[in-house]
Length: 420
Ligand code: G6P
Ligand code: MN
Image (cartoon, rainbow, N blue to C red):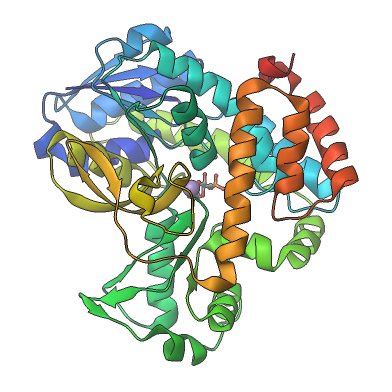
């Protein structure tokens, strides 16, 4: 089995290698074909991977993308065109206009889609026709839509591990372990009103009504206090990213007061992170930090690959077309995030219910935005780009959408060939 890894110099790579180790028995003898335009970072991660995998898998490095993709059975994509510097702009530009600045939500996510889509379309064209492309590049649902609109029927899956950590956060909040939630909606905009504990359905509304929001405890990924508040108001579970919609103005004030973007905070940690990876890579038993991506990110991706390769018929939350209208209130060709059955045929969304009414309209509006964003990112049509931002549930208004777009397209022009 050959697995191409595109973005192999990324800080998430150590977590991916841990994922491979956790499925060692299933992946013995596989080749991991690394590609990254940052060759020194890729070489570093290759040395680390060889030390961690110790002959379990072959690790090869390919400065040329096509060479990495040739003969691949799986292509795992985890890259960010423009790197963290571009992410800083995605976060800072909207904030300058009084709008949440976030790498995937809102106009920041739109700009990231515009950079990611051309690179992914080129990659899909170069990849073997029958390879499974397992994609983490964000915004995962918009780029999945762009790829499948351009190449209908291609084997392309959108990944996000958010639901893993979010389910754990709800276990902590509710004081219950062993929860399984049916997260449905769009990527970073999912909801769960059906939750089971060890297979037994929970009566959620009274449990949520009794929740006392904890003080503090917020991390860059989760905000348990606001989530508890929101869960109580809605009567079902929201994804962590719901805070950008339901606490928009409070988050803007916080981001402004904070003074640095998340990208800047990460950039400040990267030299130490890569130095630590380099140090580990020369050890007999490398044990790199889990700082980027934690454990779940890499393990989840490798589990998806194994579920397909081994025809496991496993239930996993993925981003796929809404086949058979598994979510009845969204169109059949919308890329939804939903529990799927994953086997050698790929991933099919399971019909587990519909979007709860309080968030149905919001989610439908976001789906309209995502389709427009995917079309704008594919074509480089500025009029479409403006319509996409005007359709976004942040309700930017026309003048503000236009101003953010002008600034964003200019700031990122080196990465936006399609906008001319
Ligand atoms: C979560 C999201 C990912 C996102 C990541 C950012 O895991 O699901 O889509 O890329 O957070 O984390 P970071 O540490 O880069 O802010
Ligand atoms: Mn995600």
